[in-house]
Length: 373
Ligand code: DAH
Image (cartoon, rainbow, N blue to C red; front, side):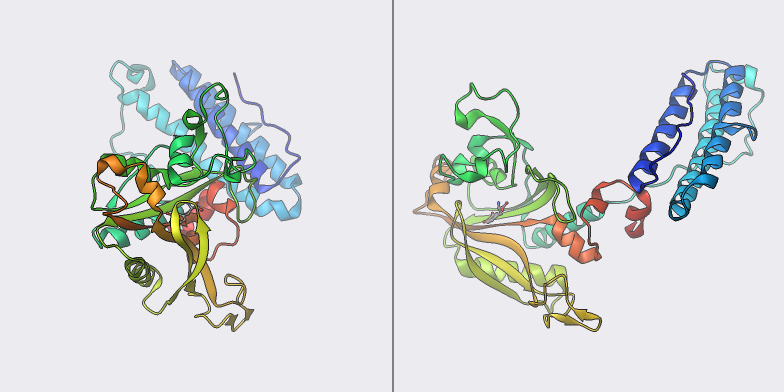
């Protein structure tokens, strides 16, 4: 089906992204259906004809667009123009070269033409942050462990010492997979709300001593806003051996933060609570933006809310009740001890790259993301 240009009424970045995305998909659909040179020419003319071609029609809407949308619109349009000519010309050459293709009907191959340059992608800033943080621990001898995003209640809650009626299970916080209510609670499937279940899964497979970091996506029932997203990223850590102490926890994390944020940052531990650690703490690093003063030349320091400290992670000594669930694989709580920690990669990336809206990381606008490419 031939594409018709929609009449734009909404010029928000989101709507532009969608409209121009649709146009690209439509062009590809049309090209896929082409089986002869004349069909290819028809698609080319429909999209690229000066007079009333798709690009011209969109261009006409640029003139009537509201003033403050013109710049974005123009950028999208330019990019679309490039895409359209590249796809159409590229498709032409593709069929010429294809064995048994339309070479005959499209004439001879001009080997002096430049190839099609495909843009090279780059690592997303959140994954880059996550990888760099994991690398700090890998240099200390930690290995990477991973686990499933769709988890059972058992690994996400029960084996982490959450009592049966803990409010974290509430559907207000946890996204459950539908149609599970006939199963016993521990077998019910959900989207993991943290990376901590991979602690249990790994301890089931690998006997102590163990030192692992666990990067991954997690989900919670939070509506998206500048600092929340129903999907986000965590990095979990676990070290179990004989005689691991809270001193090891503090030393390891202090070293890791100095490696990651720079040797001048300090760490501070404040008492907290998690069902799977005892004692538990929250760890803060001195604000690497204002240097811990709470003030910047431009005024009060916003990222640390003028406190000079930024909360980075939750941590603690693994609760003996957690070891009970993996006792049979060598984790006798009378013989081993360990520490664990968990942090949000997205928040660290926001701070590190000075971005003030989490949604920018997930909207998929290449113009934003390529700043760090
Ligand atoms: N799982 C916790 C959360 O998502 C973070 C966390 C806290 C992980 C303490 C740990 C820990 O391993 O020891 O909020």
